[in-house]
Length: 157
Image (tube, rainbow, N blue to C red; front, side, top):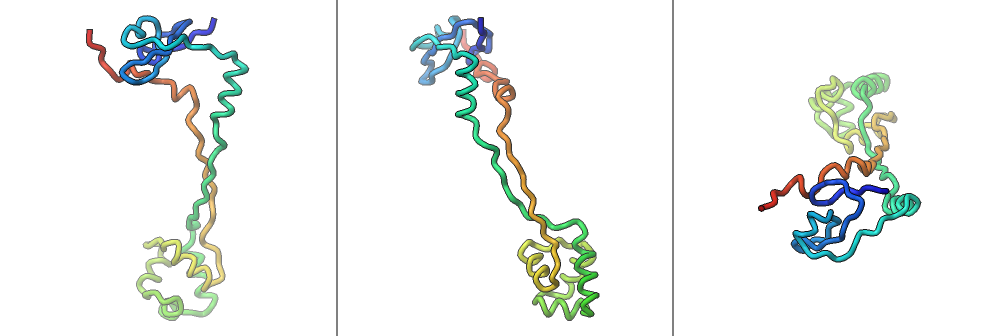
């Protein structure tokens, strides 16, 4: 026999009832069903039906693309600027930024914003912004079924 946990108390039971308790439909054991109005017995799904239902509910993993600065961006910028024969002051005026800001960027004391980093990439013909993909997965079903409503409420007797 398949044992299912009560939504209210968490007790494993072979048969549950769909019960309306304070305006919410819950699958509860016979003891907890006294707190509301029984609507119908809960229909058990075969393992094959459960799998089909799970596949319908599960969404594909969401992928998100984010842009990040490479770790050694300061060194790359400084080497390229020097290879072009430009001083910090000349390069700063070329990209319309302050010389002090360029000094801080080249020493690694300041991380440029993405728009500024892209402007520097274009001016120097280098690549300091990388695109990364992040995958966001839904929590597993076993983790989601850890708590029941009974874990959060006190029942007055």
